[in-house]
Image 1 (tube, rainbow, N blue to C red):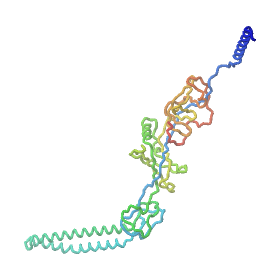
Image 2: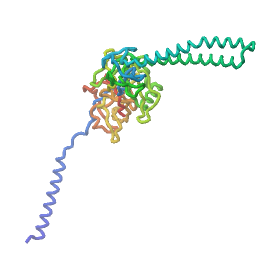
Image 3: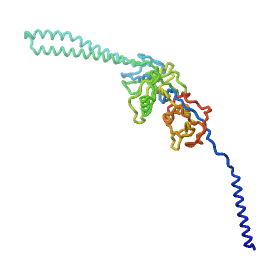
Image 4: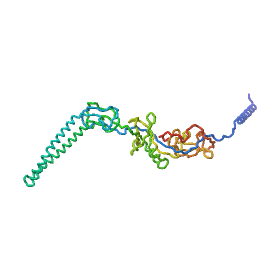
Length: 398
């Protein structure tokens, strides 16, 4: 049986052991020197002259397009072209059987000759009746009838002349010619086929491919922003060079000839909120064919004091808004919200939030807090230096 005295001794011994253990634990905790400034790598922004451009999708269209349709009824007697070949303005493409139209012209000429043959005698009769009516040798009614007959004969002559001209025009429409010079497509009718005047079915289509149009679409909101930048001086017009446009084909290759901006449409598409931009490209080798998907790089203007910031330096807050870390003259970190215009290569074009010659953190920003003292060193990475990117961009990146 354990006595009360023994219990007291055991309690005192346990308490003493706990005190010793606590004391030894406190003595074993390391007490190093206070932490120094955070090491970061920085770059200094420098303003530069930058040519801005926008990449817009579009498709090629023929400079001129002529849909070949017959203007008279008849049977196709000949087809006088090779499908896919070049044809010239005025070249005969189809020949409609002209026999019935030749006969109509001959009949019209005969009717005209008959009417003209009666005209002299009627003219002479009217003249005689006029003289006799003066001396009352004939009645006034007889004279009036002679004049009326003469005028009717004259009207018949004019009518027959019009019929002859109409028959001549119809006969002239039997050879179907090309109104423009260009490349002709496939034929929808063969020799022996029946065609009718102004039918809805196109016999063939001729397209002028030198030069060609490229129609691209541009958001009207972006067009308004561009005009505002030019108005407030953020962008400067690049003069005649501002009309030059580069073209990338479907396989990503660059078309060797620059195009010229012709016009922007005056109507905004209510469904897409965009306007059509038309560009003209020379096409001597006919590489560009109607309907091709292309990407046009349109020069916007020159930004004389652009600031380009490597994307590595830009972070995003929980709302997706971009920010950077700035090291002030006192060596302290400052979290700065910025606005970016677009991506250019691996850099952002900054429109607001940072100024030239400020030190922007490239590495070490994830360790920073606002007001923290830092030790900055120049960034020595292989990121593209501001100002070297030249690839055209269309994304805003905001």
